[in-house]
Image (tube, rainbow, N blue to C red; front, side, top):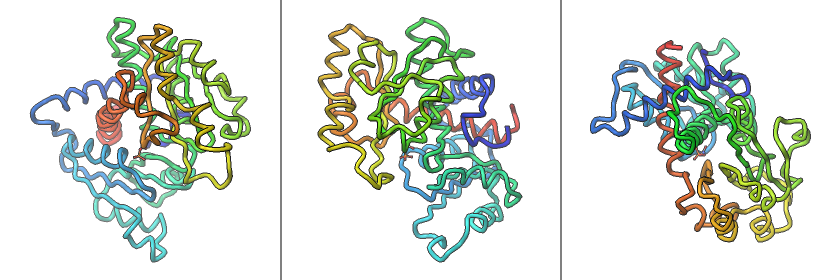
Length: 320
Ligand code: CP
């Protein structure tokens, strides 16, 4: 594996290996000195053409914990405004010493383009490309799910997948690279996936995907899933009215306090709630649900550092 561009083409053995290495990396975060010398003298560039809080900071923290040097590039305030191309920007970063380029771009396929041309020889990691994929988000979600699933089953997570786990993914699937990357990875790891969304927020062709489609959130929750992943309503990608009103969306597809109480009433004590962030509190998730003991949103963020350490280590050390 030279690049990490998608989960669609990530095999089970490679995925489990990344999650297992991430388990080791997670222990570094619990030490007094949270550093390993593994990538000392290596340089990682983060190349962000779209806004980010979690992913960019998480990659930077991951690289620094491995003792790598980090170059941060944000398109805002850069020479992109003067017309500089992706090729010239990437080549500039490589000329400064980058050996791995972590790229987020609004265009689906931008990371693959960078990896498939001879513009640069660096490892390319997709940190989110348009509505296509966000593989490290799916890996950190799988890591979080695996820790929970192993605990429920009373087993060691190392070497395991998500066989038999049921995961419901809810919301704006149409615009979500997180939903796509999660679907491919969760299926590879053996989970059962259900998408719940308004018909207008499901892409054409989703009925051929390896998942169940349900338009009714209460019906999907009544089946007693092991995990519920709420997706952000991506208003910035919407150029039309996909639902009548935010109140209607929240009532039918939001994880609100009533749905939280319904999980308790059904005795579903092991059902956890995930959200990739950033959250629209009061729209796709209520504050009561986001701050509840079922929510693992901040665990997802912490686990993201360990997972990204594993990815950087495996790509840059050649140990795979
Ligand atoms: N989950 C996620 O990608 O968050 P950011 O946009 O803040 O990086």
